[in-house]
Image 1 (cartoon, rainbow, N blue to C red):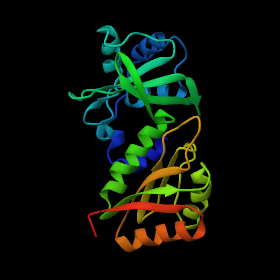
Image 2: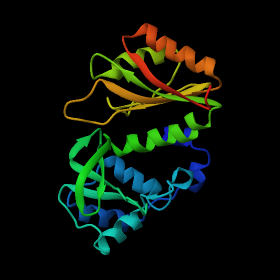
Image 3: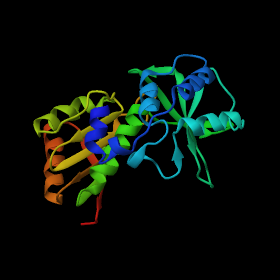
Image 4: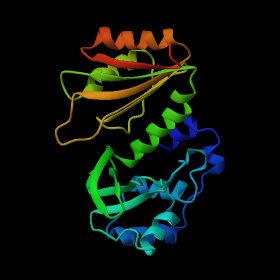
Length: 241
């Protein structure tokens, strides 16, 4: 993960800053159990500053987490641990770990109001949230042409069909993602795919694809459509064609 982020995000190594050990220990005491190994890595590397990877209205710093607990915005819970504060004034949905749903040395991430209520589970792990956002912002979103669409299959495991095609096209993909997140990069294009983790997974994934021109993107999508049983639906182009 570290090599992936340092390659994708310019200037990250010069600007990220980790938490103090005592802050990490205090968060672990609030959690009441060992922190997921990836979260400990994140706090060690970016617990004070995420540098250029930082979000506009989201604060994942250790100090913000500790302040929220100290000011009783949220109460300690044996299952849920606040990891990200949302400063949106209209509808703040903070990020929490669901520590009862570990995955790949990490844990399920959910969003909800501070006092509880309906939960939304956007990513299977915090690692996938960060990696997806980095590749989307610093590669896909900076390409001259991009598009968003849906991949629809006959079975829930969309990536088992998609991965071989992307491999054959020369895309590299990190090995730390699960069945709900696909990340692909090459010299001329990049792609991110995701779907909501569910107990009964759906046979659909949303994706964003960026490249040097529309011809490059059409070729990639054409390979997916002809070499797999996946269907591509609801394509939107940016800029519009």
